[in-house]
Length: 87
Image 1 (spheres, one colour):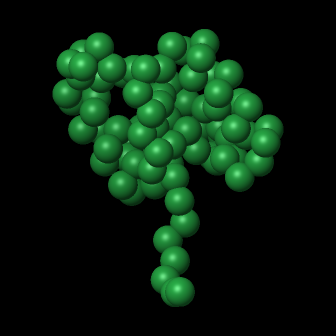
Image 2 (cartoon, helix red, strand yellow):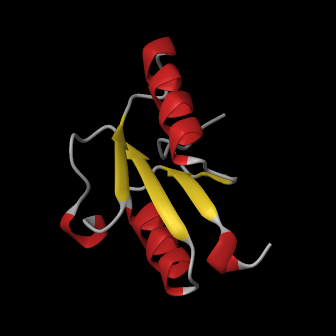
């Protein structure tokens, strides 16, 4: 798929790595819908379509699935997570 045809659903879009990925995808020509817990995207990601959701809840997953379907996402990049160290 060419980047210009990609409609990317990007989880973790409000974090540092997520913001960098969104910026790079958009520069390549992709449309990006960011997902994060914040009600609005960070200033650096303000141009993104945005979905507020907590992916650790059933409701949050349903919200993202519905938004992705209606937006017609055709690529998913799952970059959400919590940094931690340990066994």
